[in-house]
Length: 203
Image 1 (cartoon, rainbow, N blue to C red):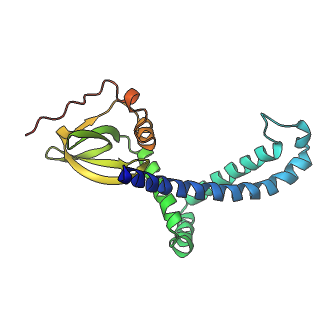
Image 2: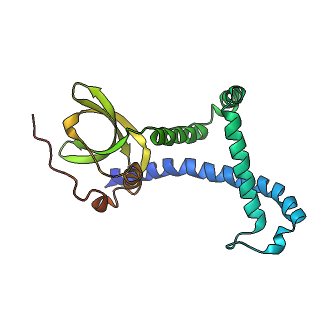
Image 3: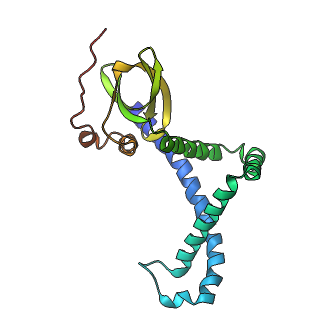
């Protein structure tokens, strides 16, 4: 129990750190966008229209400004000189910040998951039980590559290799599998209903 509590608390802290960093950055970005949105709202007289679903016109304009800036930045980042500027900025200013590297790694991991059409949730036989994993690919000779997540952080874990008979694909989505890991197994009953939990026969 002591080990479980320790690993859970540490995992929770590691999960919350990048989230807190993103919220902190977005908060500053929203305040800057509000400074741009306020004159626009005053000039157009939008504040006189009241609130929309409890949200003021300035807040809505500020959010739209952030979306527009993010879209423009994404378009620029796709160009050759945009990538060079991004690499220079990252290597010279952000490369030494562990928080930035953590957020970047998580973002890249989620992007890879979205782009990997063959990635599937699976049950992985470990000792006398099963563990949620992400089936990556077959590596030949009856072996497969699997990512084993560490609860409660769905993108933190280890890449391992197993005989194919010890890995059983699940009929759930990656979002459902990651939610189970994030919630430390809560919701497994509904998600795994009907799954074959019989252990493989010993060779």
